[in-house]
Image 1 (cartoon, rainbow, N blue to C red):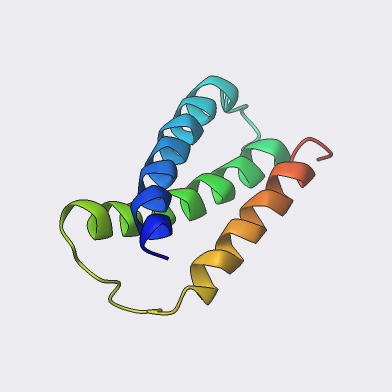
Image 2: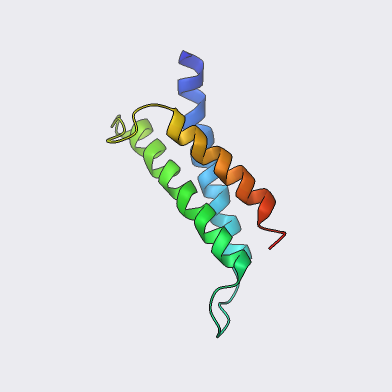
Length: 92
């Protein structure tokens, strides 16, 4: 468990940076009639990823424990949702 606590926050920060790059390169221009379905799903995925990244950043660098949702069940559920959104977003 002590190795997991050392590796996961670093991997999480790398994933957030890679996701930010993907968001910037794939989001594209917003059409006149509003966001496309792809852009909406990508925005939701980015929001969830940023929330996890913010939480991991605070834990890693400031040693701040989560304010709410202290168990690992909620972040794990968000990761599963992000994975499903990743699979779903190219179908919309």
